[in-house]
Image (cartoon, rainbow, N blue to C red):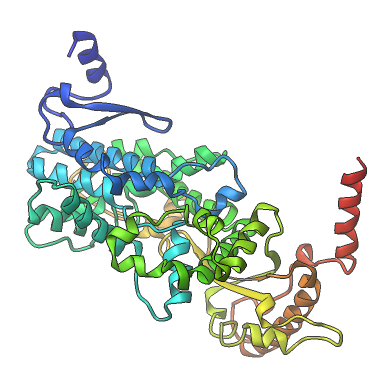
Amino acid sequence: MSNDSYRKLLRRGYTEDSSLMDDDDADTLKYVNDPIHGYIPLSPTALQFIDTPQFQRLRYLKQMGSAYFVFPGCSHNRFEHCIGTSYLATSVVQNFMQWQPELDITKRDLRCVTLAGLCHDLGHGPFSHVFDNVFLPRVVPGIKWSHEQGSEMMLNHTIDENHIDIDDSDVSFIKKLIRGSETGAPGEKTFLFDIVSNNRNGVDVDKFDYIQRDCYNVGVKSSYDFSRLMLNSRVIDDELCYSHKEAYNLTEMFHTRYSLHKRVYSHRAAEGIERMIVDAMAVANPVLKIADAIHDPRMYQNLTDDVLRDIERSREPELQEARDIISRIYTRDIYKFVDEFIMPADFSAIASKQHINEAAIVGFRADGDDFVEHDILINFARKHFGMGSENPVDHINFYSKYKNNEKFSIPSEMISMCMPQKYQEHIVRIFTRTPHKRKQIQKAVRRLIDQIDKRIQRNSQNSMSPSSLTPNRGLTIPDDIEDLVKKRRLDFNSA
C-alpha cells in the first residue's frame, strides 16, 4: 500500500492495529463507495459471503417493498443495507477495542459481529415484511415463521454451498447475534448482543443504517445523528450505554423511526398495492409453490421480488387472475383506501377483529348497496416508537463525562417536557378491491363504527381515555366521487 493510501486510512480513523476483522494486510481489503457511509472496506472474510449467489440475491429485494411503487427514489435493496449494517457493526466493536481494552474483545468477537451484521437479512422474502407478516399467514394459517429464521436457514445454506471454512461455534454465535438477546449466551460477552439486533431497547446498527438509508432515498430529512451515538457510547456492566448528552438524540431516532412508519412505510397507496401483491401471490401459490420455499433453501434462493415477473411471464390459465391483478398495479387501478380510525391501545378489546370484520361491515349495507365481503380488506396495525406502549429511551442507560463507569437512566421529563404522552396507537384501515364501491363501503363502515362508539362511551364514562371514535372529516368521500374522477379524466384528455 502506498504512503498516501495509508495516510488516508489513518485520516479515516484506522490505526495500524485496527484493520477490519482479522485480516492483517490492508492490501487484501476491497472498497465499495456507499452514498451513506462513504468508502466501506471489505475484508476477504466478508467477501467470502458477499460473493455468493445467496448474498447476491439481496440485490433483488427492495428494502422498502411496495413503497417503491409510490416513492420512486426508494429503489435501494437489502444488499447495500446489509453491507452498511456490517460496516457499522465493525466500527462499533473496533471503537470499543481501541478505547476499552479491558473488555478483552477478541478478533473472533469482531469477526462474528461483522458477519452477523452482514447476514442478518439473508432470510427476507419478496417485498420484505409483506412475505412473512401478510402472505404466509394467509396461505399457511397458523404458521409461525419469521425472516430471522429464514436468515439462519440461508446462512447455513451459504456456508455449505460455497464451502466456507468457519467453525460451527462461530456459526451458532452469529445466529444468536442475529436473533438478539437481552441475556446474551453462555461463554459470550452480553454487550455484543446489543450491537446488531438489540432486544434490550432497540438501539442497534441495523436501525442506524436503515433509518438513514431510507430517509436519504425517499427524500425525508432526518434530525438525529447516528454517528454521534456511535462515538458517545461505551460498555458498562456488560451493556451498551450512551453519554447523557445523547438522550434527546436517541429520542429523535425513535421519533424518526415512527415518522417513517407513519408517512412512508404505511403510505395508503403503498399499503393498497401491498394487498394486491399478496392477492397475486396467493392466487399463484398453488401453481408456483411460493410458500414451500421457506422449507427449501435452494428454492428460497431464487425467491425474490421478481416473483411478480414470473407470474407475468407465465402462461398457465390458473394464473390469469394473478396476472390481471399485477396489470392493475401497473395501470394504477389499485385497491383504494376507504377509511381509517386511530385509537389508543385500551380500545383494542372493543374495536377488535371480533367486532370490525368484513361480515360486520356487510351487515350495515344500505338499500341499493351491492358490495360483498370480498370487496373489503381490513388491516389492523400498531404504530409505536419501537417498544409497544413504552418509551424505549426509558430502557437505555447513560453515563456522564465525570463518571463514565457508572450507568443510570434518565426520566423523560428530564430530557424534555414536550415528550409524547403515549407511545403507541392502534390503527384500523379499510381498503376495497373495487374502487367504485368505496363510498358505499365507507358509509357502512361508519355506521358500524358509530355502533361501536356508543358501546365505548358507555364503558368509558369514568375513564380518562377519549370517549369517541369520531370519523375524520378529511377522509369523508363525497357522494359524487365517481363524477369527480370522470371529470379529472376528461380534463386530462382534453388538455
